[in-house]
Length: 91
Image (tube, rainbow, N blue to C red; front, side, top):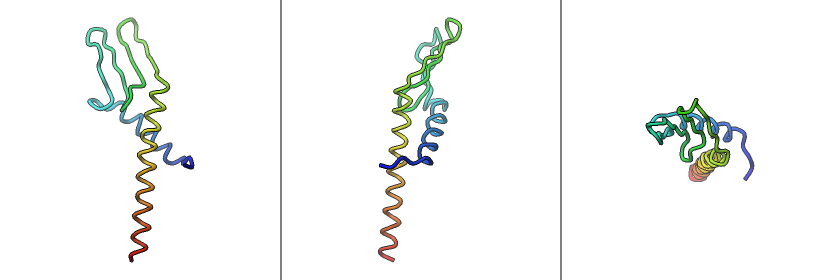
């Protein structure tokens, strides 16, 4: 599989956008200490308001999210090319 710059940019943008959409990428873990985790499907960024506001960062979860969406977009691109090839063959 050849690395595609366009797919990687779109994947990164989608990971960031989906991470900050309420009810999709934001998960509230503790109401008392107000711990928020961001990411979809894997949670990769945490913000903890209690105790002065601390951040946590999960590198492997971010990489997983990126590769997950990259694979989805790569499969969609491959499917579109195959459908276009079939249309040319039968027309």
